[in-house]
Length: 425
Image 1 (tube, rainbow, N blue to C red):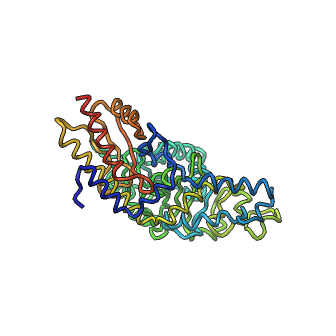
Image 2: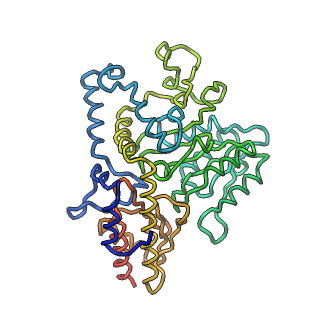
Image 3: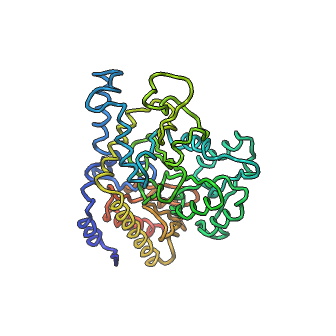
C-alpha cells in the first residue's frame, strides 16, 4: 500500500477497518475531555467495558452461593478455566489441552525451568538473549544458582554485533551450533521488549531440537501481538502475561503452554500442588501426586476466579475479532507509523529519530531512539495527551494496538512529534 501523510488518508484507513467497532468496547483515559492517545498496550492494555460486569458476576455468586459457587450457579467456578483455554489456544497457536492459566509470568517461568531445565553432565548450558527483560535475567540467574551452578559458567548470552541494535538470527543459530554438546535449554523472548524485534521461533526451536536441547519462550510481548504457532513449531514450553496486549488488568493471571507430548510423563520433574491433581480424585485428598494429563497438571493452587473473570472479558473480544485480522491491522498500524517517522526525518534539517525496531520483524511496538532533546519530546507528548513509554537512554516506545487504536491516532502522534521537535530546533 502507498501511504500518504495526511489526515484524510488516515481517516480513510479507519473507515475501511473491519475491526473499528472494537474500540467502543474499551475505556480510555481522558485528556482535556477527549480520549487520550493510548499507545501503551505493550505495557498495560486498556480496560474492556465488560470487565467490571464479569467480575461483579463472580462477586454476586460469592454473595449468594458462598463456597457452593464452585459447583452451582450459571457459571460454576470449577469450570471457569475451560472457557479460557479455547480463545488462548487460538491466540498462541496451541491445542486447548496445552494451555493452563495460572500464577504470574515469573512464577510460571520458574515452574517451567523446574521441569524443562534438566542439566546432565556437561550438558548444562542455557542460551538466552543478552539484555533480556530483567525478570528473565533474574529468573535464570537465581534458578541456576539454586541448581548449584554459577551463572557465568552455564548461561550463554547472544548479543547484537558491535555497532548494531538487533540480534542477527544467524548468530542465534551459530551459538546453538557452537554449544551443541553442552546445551540443555534455549530460553528466549519471542519479541524483545526494548527494540520490538520479533525472533524466528520456528527455526530456533528446530535448531535446538536438532542438538538435543529443550526450547522455551517468554511471550510477554508476543501473546496477542503477533501470530504464533507454538504447537506446529514444536515448542516445548512458553509463558506469558495477560496484562499487556491481552488487556486483562494489572497483575493479571498468567498463561503457560506445554506441548502435549509431556502431558502423560509422570516422571518429568515438576513442582506440584493439589489443583494440578487428577480431577476425578482430587477431593479424596489421597497421598502421592497424580497429575492431570494436560498442561493443567502443572497447576499448584486454587486460582483466583476474579482474575479469571477479568481475563475472560478480554478473551471474548479476541475470539470475536480473530487473531489473524488483529495481526494484519497491527502490522499496518506499525507500517504506517514507520512511514510517518521516515517522513519526519526526511523533512527535518537533520534526523530526529533512529528507529530501533526492524521493519520486517516486528509486531505493534515501535521503539525510537531520540537523537536530540529526547526527554523534552517525551514530556511534550505526555502534555499533549499521548501515553508513551520512556526507556533509558533516550528511547521512546509506543504501540498502536489493533483492538482499540486508530490510524488517525498514529497520524496525530506524528504531527505532535513534528510540532514538538520543531520547537527545539
